[in-house]
Image (cartoon, rainbow, N blue to C red; front, top):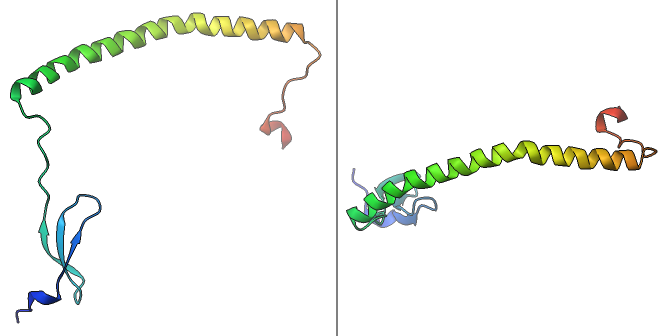
Length: 103
């Protein structure tokens, strides 16, 4: 029993933009055609150079994070000293109430 194609309707998938043909009686996908993805790189030499540059970018990002980690001790020390100085200037100020203290 072959059904005619006139009852089918076309739909576009909202996620992948594929073309779907759906049978309304059975509520099933009868045909599926994926969209062609555009090439991300046209030239193999450009792709190789881009890939080669990734290692340099990763190394630079790593070195930057190492330097930030080395400096973080000094930054935290300066912040602590400043807050300790503020606390000593206003000793009558009571500490803020924590959520845990309200129970």
